[in-house]
Length: 514
Image (cartoon, rainbow, N blue to C red; front, side, top):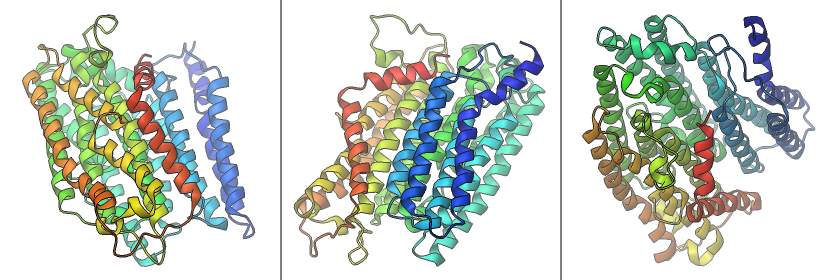
């Protein structure tokens, strides 16, 4: 295939995302009609997501494209992220069914579809410029999502401005880091970077490579809420609309970690061929960032009584767990993974474990916020842990669903959260002796387990309040049954993947198999 044909075929790869953007434009037009209902807007948005998935399965994407030319490339990872995002967005649309009305519903769903397209394009991007633009396709609609249907306009505007300013700053940092990466390798093409970077970051260039890594981590760290780039999270989580907070807790993490996987994939591809000095220092940066993020998130969460602020710091701690998967990406690069005598858990690489935990985290997080929104009555709001007292007696079903999500956050057996944590920690322990910082990565697994135990302290406070305390005033629900449906779906899948995780393992293995 020639260069011209490669560039022409690139547009076929973005047809599902173009469909989402097209449907979003239709929704924005509907928003100009004051008589439009949220039911109509929701049906149109769900139809757009369904169309994108149908196109993903029916279109034949070209595989003979020139990798060093194409700005987007087909891959299993791109398909996996597209499905994760479309299913998550469908849950979020159902989540927002009663929190939006009329033309605002159309605007909200349209912004959500554009953000979904942005995350999907992040996974298929094969160029630094395309990757940056895809990340901005997520950021810009997020400002609109934060502003729409906030009940406390003053606080909503304040959180939106705070998020906007920090987002712009983080984008500048990420772009500065990408410019250094371009300067080292002489190309913006990621396929070229993967082949040139192992040579370019040898001893004479490893300092410049580290500068690029630090700035990219700083810029993308905002999206994954890694310490110390998490300062917006507690205030935004506390004041933002429930469905938008659930969106912020999960979707930017998917985009951020997928982007980091693509930007650091040369280490996993090349393994020990990367300059040992650079790899050692790069792993040290990720090691420190993971440890500080886990401890900071968990210790700050221990001090919280407000449920949303608690979940905000929990989100920070979970970003630390996921960074363990990123730090262990190169550890299994040169090890065989096809032996039937080796347990599958030991054949799973760092980025596969990271994808498994991302799915588990999305289920338990969206589910928890949906149940909290269901319990939040205007005359009897649920803001603090004490507000959940006696919930199991007055509302046993939502209490059980919330308990499943919380137990998964703790990482107890029979939940998807347990499966994800075990995979991440097992990868850190099962490192090749040829990888720099082999011993330190094993210590990282132990630190992660310690932090999981610390996190149990504040999660158990929620369970104790629901099941072992008596309410002074019984919890009154909002009556929005669709929120129970969202919570039920998330809790059911959390238990299913906890009891039978093999499909999740296979999905992650397939996603990185091409």
